[in-house]
Image (cartoon, rainbow, N blue to C red; front, top):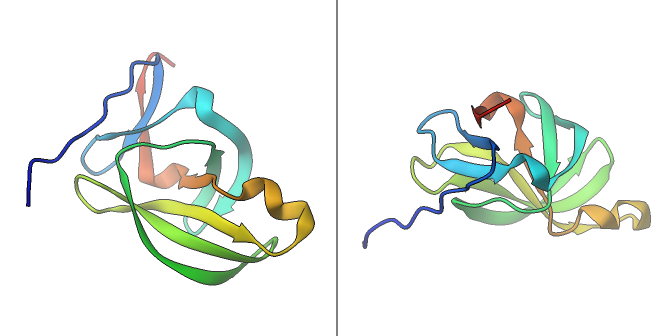
Length: 112
């Protein structure tokens, strides 16, 4: 095991892990705020940092069947949401490669 490399974001509005405060996403990377996670509201991000991916699995979500991988904080291993790997319905393909981050699992840092 080596030294953990953490990426720090410079934007004025940052989302960080609510457990250890490691930076995870820039507010400017939000694609949509109208998503639902396991713990309530969630955001769809085009990019996140300081996360690791769990195994891929097929999951039946509100919008249909998707292949997803849970995302974990790379520092404390807390679950933050999931990554859409594959969408099986044509109108859901825009989610592929994007990330769901649950609002209840992150905190706001910076100037809001």
